[in-house]
Image (tube, rainbow, N blue to C red; front, side, top):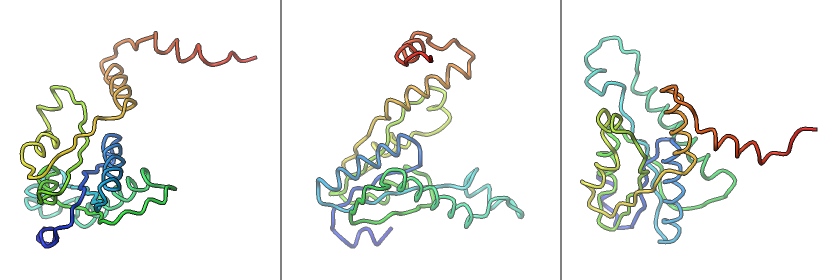
Amino acid sequence: MSESRTSSTARVVVGVSGSPGSLAALGRAAEEARYRGTELWPVLAWEPPGGDFAIRGTTESAFVPEELEQLARDRLLKALGDVFAGTGLRLPGRALVARGAPGRALVQIADRENDLLVIGAGQHSRLHRALWPSVSRYCLAHAVCPVLAVPPPALESALTARHRRNTWRLRLDSGHVEREFSAAPPDA
């Protein structure tokens, strides 16, 4: 982390997890970096399942930190490929994989007042918010730089709503389904 303090070059730091919301945030961060003429720093933060304490507490862990870090690198590269494939986007910067809680890692990396921290602002249920801490809330409360919260894409919201209705075995809104199929030409 100390190397980020040595330069005064402005950066756009963006949290990436591979989710549709984080991919939208990555695309927006690239636009901001290009517009501002700054570096783009995509960051994927990861923690071992159960945290570091769980790994230290066992002698034979099924989770090897080096393998988990490689999986995180692969997920970051896939996210970068998903967003920038074929665009030839060339921005200065650095992609990072950071071990630790996502909110804390992002705030530690975006540690300059002239940085911009870009995060996906997902829509979560009350239960989800109660069980898992919000990365966006943590960043908004602790960052020393401006934070840009990017709303999730409309498709993600629609898929989440349908998934929730399927999980609870509720009827899907048939009006949307009928409209989708009525626009298609009939088979001859």
